[in-house]
Image 1 (tube, rainbow, N blue to C red):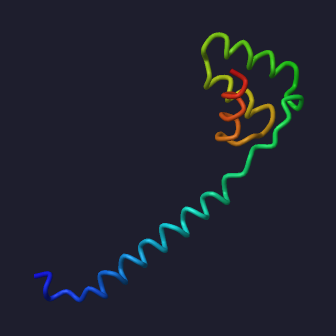
Image 2: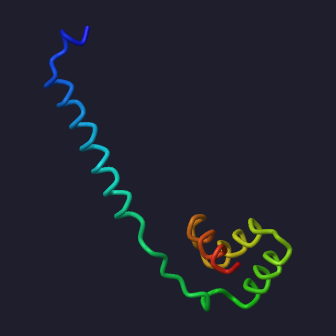
Length: 85
């Protein structure tokens, strides 16, 4: 069966898939920017609630409080909370 398949077609298909993979990898790398967030922008009340939640092991509650106070997205809020642990 492989005798009937043109090898150039196999190579061309592999090249197309590899090109797509490399372009996608580059796009993902461009989208991952470092988070520029100042912990001082958290209100004192929210910060106290976040620290209490973390001490009690309630990470999700801490993330929720941070998001409500600052308007951060879920991923960024999780990154900040993970850094506060």
